[in-house]
Length: 190
Image (cartoon, rainbow, N blue to C red):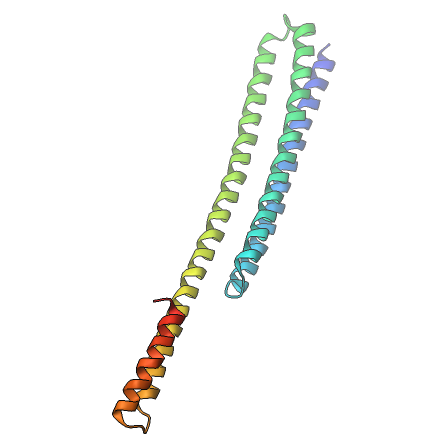
């Protein structure tokens, strides 16, 4: 009877260790992927447009969600098997191993809590990465808007300077400036 209890405990521990190792492997894999994507995003940020950034962000989120779902399903299956093993042990050895079962339950609870913390960490990292990418995109948009505004101002100053420095008489220059100003106002929607 003790041998079957030990085998049950051994299987339970093996299942939990396997599940945690898989979760850690998935975390490392997802972390490496996220680092590569972050480096590439920093290099290409000046040339990216809104239609290119959002699909990459969605793909990253889908990858992380898929990894978390896989880890959760593996942990759920291991927890179910552990509960089945525990139930079997309780039915057959309750009087002889009461304190041993309590210790096993404590270890299972501890393992489940550690796995939950690891999943929370993965989720937090994914949210932080998403927020970072959104912040970078917003900064890019603000810089682009500033550049457009400066170009328009420079264009207006250039046109006015060119008209002022022409070799025409003053009345003709004023007339031309007035005509150009009307065209520019129409272009800018003023």
